[in-house]
Length: 225
Image 1 (cartoon, rainbow, N blue to C red):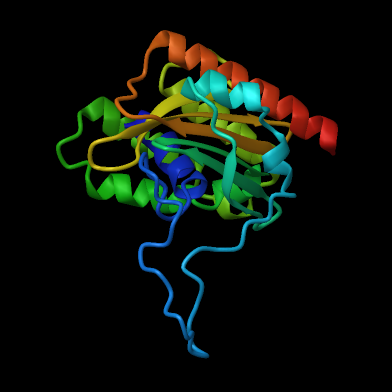
Image 2 (image 1 turned 90 degrees about the vertical axis):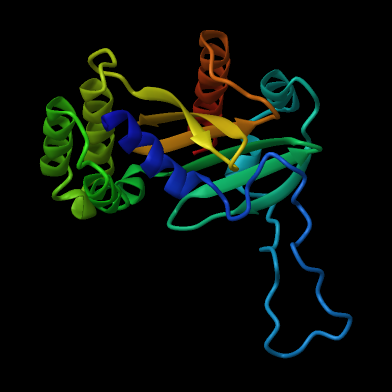
């Protein structure tokens, strides 16, 4: 149950609208030749100057996808955070960094969603969910430090080693494809590295690779501050 909480909360914040394992960098529908005053862009403008776009090198992205993934197709920043997505053919790589307290604000709603689907959960799962609910009762007013402490506590409830600051999980991207996401909460900042290629399955080797890339991204972010 707890294993579903951290990735669900991460997915709510790190997945851009329309992110998938296919080449979807083009709008779903092409704009008309004569836009009207009420027309809105199908995709947000790309701001490649976002700090997230500098957090992975070309070699980092190749290490994840097994091929070059160099075209920035989405980059933006909200609530003090930054996000950048690269895409090439069927590969998608995305980095998100934001103050941990902003991530924490999504957690109570995630817990509510899990509660609504926990009727058949085991007593142990229900106990863990209740523990998480109590832990996150004040999440809306967490400081960045408190949010990172909550991240660690949730990981420990799932059985990770005491003091864990990084988790790796599989996140559904489409009905048939998944992405692997490493999330780390350190010094009050939540950082996520997500990637997806066709047929991707989580393995120990993949977990090690994406964790290493996440650590590099965190160091580059810290150096840029």
